[in-house]
Length: 196
Image 1 (tube, rainbow, N blue to C red):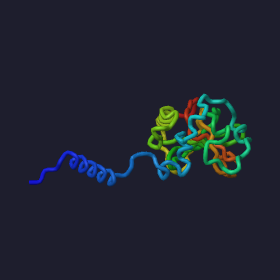
Image 2 (cartoon, rainbow, N blue to C red):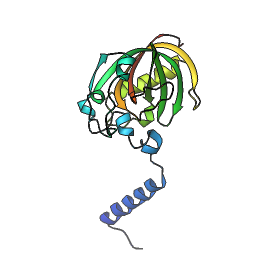
Image 3 (spheres, rainbow, N blue to C red):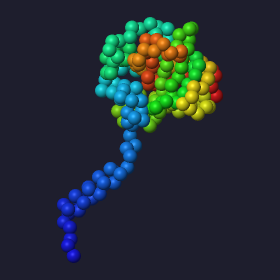
Image 4 (cartoon, rainbow, N blue to C red):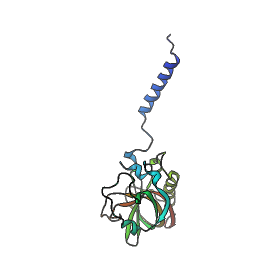
C-alpha cells in the first residue's frame, strides 16, 4: 500500500476544498442580486465610502430636487450630495421590493423623492453603517407590517428618513425626483405615524 506524505495530504485536502467550493453558489452580495453595477455605491461599500459624512444634514425633498443633475451620471462617489447623509421628513406614499432592497416613494409639499433600504444580505463586510442599514430594514418590515412585493403598495406613513445621497437617471415619472436624486442607502428611519 502506497502511503502519502504530509505535503501530498495537504495538497489533496486543498484540492478537495476547492472542488467543493466551486460546486456551491456564492452566498455573498453580487451585482446581479443587489442592484446592478452600482450596487457598491448603493450599499455604502464602495471605495469612497469613508468620505461620507454620516451625521445627517436636515433638508427637504424640494431642496434635494433642486440640485443640478451631474453630467455625466457619477459612477463613483464624486459629488458633495453623494458624500453626505441627509434627513427629510416625509410621507411614504408607496413602497415595493426590488432587486437588493425596498424602494420607498417619499412625498412632501408637492415634491417626490425615492429612497431605498438595501436588504441585509446585500451588505458587504465593508459596508459603512452596516448595522444601521440592517436595523432600518428590520424596523420597516416589522413595523409597517406588510411584506414588500414587486407591485407598488400604498402606505401613508409619516417618517423621518435618513440616507446617503445617490444619483440615478433623470426621470419624469410620478414619485421620483426629476433630477434623479435619491437617498440610497437609507441608514435610518423614525416612524411618526401610519405604521404598526
